[in-house]
Length: 110
Image (tube, rainbow, N blue to C red; front, side, top):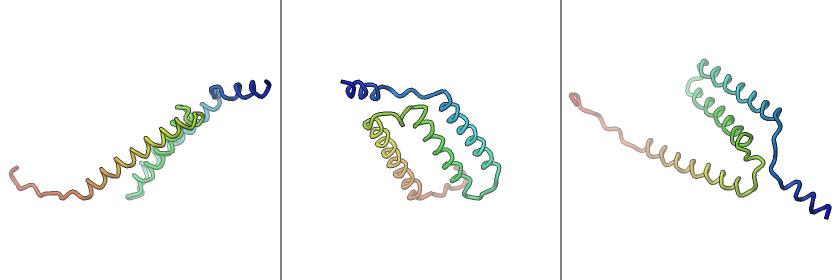
């Protein structure tokens, strides 16, 4: 009976502490400042790459902690992973369409 009660106790919803939220919020502010700092630096073509990497880290923090995906059951995590996978497929198709497109010269006067 005690084992069953312990199982029920641990299967309930996870309640995050306020300090956890404040830590994640502080990290998001620091990463936002880093994004601004990178935008002010001249890294050539790597400005966009670094900014997108910082944005991905910020998105993962929001998804994992503020949307509680870290403490969700496996089916929810699988659905989120499938959504990200599908987004990657759509972005890849869009990138191939953009790269493979032949740009036509517009004649003068149009």
